[in-house]
Image 1 (cartoon, rainbow, N blue to C red):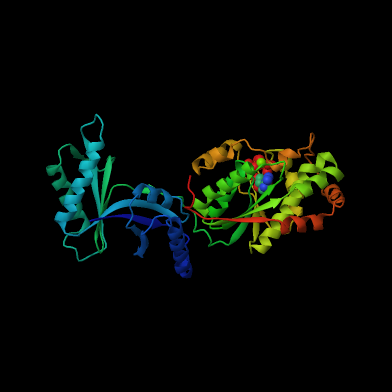
Image 2 (image 1 turned 120 degrees about the vertical axis):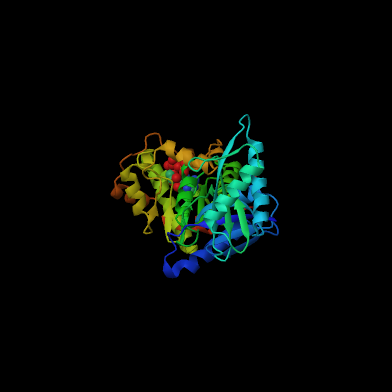
Length: 396
Ligand code: ATP
Ligand code: MG
C-alpha cells in the first residue's frame, strides 16, 4: 500500500495538437510547485498526474490546489487490485470516517467504482454492489444512501487499485506560461496582487515592477512587496521582481508640474518604465490593479491618459470589480493580511491635495515636457534592483 495524490486537469484547453504542449507545461509547473518536498515523484498516466513518495500529505495537497490548470486532487490509497485487498482498505476508509462522526451514530455512504482494466473479473456495477454489501456487513453504523451520502467511496481499477473519498477542488484556469508573459505593476496594496493572480490564472507568466521612493518609503515597504510576490509565486511560479527607484522622477514632477496633475503624471511614468522592463523581459503586456472610479486616478479619463503613455496593451482585470469583491479574492489567495500592513506607499508621499479627476491628454503631455523624461527614465531603469523569487523558499 502506498499513499498517492491523484491530480486531475481540465480538458477544455487541450485542443488537438496543443495537448502535449499543455501537458508538458502543467507537468513542469506541478514539479516546481512541489519542489520543496524532497524525493516526491510526479508521473503521468491515462490523462492525469500522480504524486507519490511524500510525507506531509496536507501540504502537498495545498500546494497542488494552487496550480493553475488543475481541476481537482484526491488523496488516495494505491493498493493491489484483488477484491480482498480493495475490501480491506475500503473498510479502513469507512471505519476512519465513522470515527470522525461526533454524536451521530449512522454514516451514510455509497460506492462508486470505475475500471479501465476491462479484464477485471467484475464490472463496476458488480463492484459497487459487492463492496457496498460487504461493508454493510462488516462495519456497524453504515447505511447506504445513493442520493445524498455522507461519504462517496471511490474505487478505481487501473494498473493498480485506487481508493479515495475526497475530491478537492483546485484553482482552475490554464497552466502558467502557456499564454505568454506580462509585467505586473505591483504596489503594496490590495488590488494589484489580485490583478496578477487573475492574469496568471489565464496562463500568463508574470514579472513584477515595484516603484519605491527611498528615503520616503522604507525598507519595510519594500519587504512587504517581496512578501506579496512570494505569496503569488505559489500560483504563478517564479517571479522576477524589479524594484525601481522612483524618487528623482517624483521630485522633478513635484517641482515643475501642476500639483493637481501629479498623480496622473506619476502613473504615466510608471507605465513607461514598466513598458521598458516588459521589453527587456520579453513580455507582451502590462497589468495593473485599477478599476473604474475607485480613486481620482482611475476615472475613465485618467485611464485613457495612462494608456496613451505606452504602446503596449494594458490589462486591468479588476476593471469592473467592487472593492469588496477584490478584498474577498485577496483573502482567498492569502495576500490580504500582507497587503493591509500599514507601510507608506510611493504615491501617498506625493499626493496632491486636489487631484484632477478628468485630465486632458494634451495638458498632461504639455506638463510632461517640463521634465527631462527620457533621461530620468533611463536613469531609473539603469538602477533597477532585480530580485528573483521562487515558490517554496522562505515560506512564512
Ligand atoms: P493597489 O491596491 O494595487 O495599490 P489602489 O487601489 O491603491 O491599488 P492606486 O494606488 O491608485 O490604486 O494604484 C493603481 C495601480 O497602479 C495599482 O493597482 C498598481 O498596479 C499600480 N501601482 C500603484 N502604485 C504602485 C507602485 N508603487 N509600484 C508599482 N505599481 C504601482
Ligand atoms: Mg495603492
